Image (cartoon, rainbow, N blue to C red; front, side, top):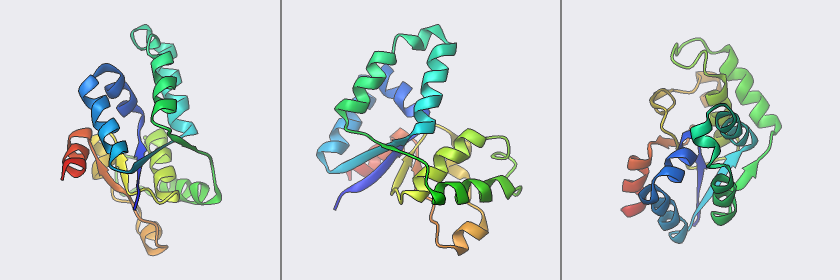
Length: 155
């Protein structure tokens, strides 16, 4: 059975700069993991590349990864909207209140029932979704850094 993995913004930069990290994703694909990202992640990647010349050279490589890894690009749904709304009303985790973009990426991963969300953001890894979402049967994917995902893939 294929496992669904959502890639956050920073993971693309990590993989563009590290052949070792890129090979981990290739290995996971060979082990039947499917990769996903969202329009919001793609937009954030492009904005970062536009702002910072050191990353601009990666634009072609980024689009190559999307194609090479056959990454499905997720689009907004009613579930994404509901989850984003609930995140905006949740003031229990101060680390995430100002992180609208990260919360939106997480909303996509939850709405599309991803098994894993791979991120370099420690706050996102530790974030507990609001009780109202948990009570509505929304489940936060296993949220890991690349090193943690490496352990999953290699086990």
